[in-house]
Image (cartoon, rainbow, N blue to C red; front, side, top):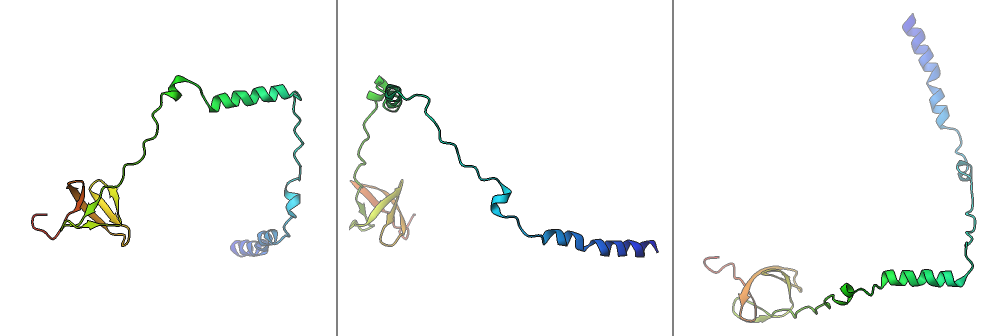
Length: 130
């Protein structure tokens, strides 16, 4: 008998949580009050203070220390070394992809290379010994 009354009580209370979820949603402005920021007022109206603040900012951004003057200029990148195929013919459209690696920009394939004369020579993987 106790189990039957328990199940009846449980069945009677089951819709209560479901009804709580079906209440209408509040308007978006009800969830938080709408407040506009108050306009900030400058404590100084003197233009000299603003000029001094600008000068300090400029000094911070453009230091005139000897360390800044002694820095090295940026070197221009060296021109790309020519790439030759395994027969010694120059190949155009190759880009250095790393040490001893080049990429054919037309096909997207990568090739292993070795230093050769004034440039790089593609290593023929089908040749004996490699």
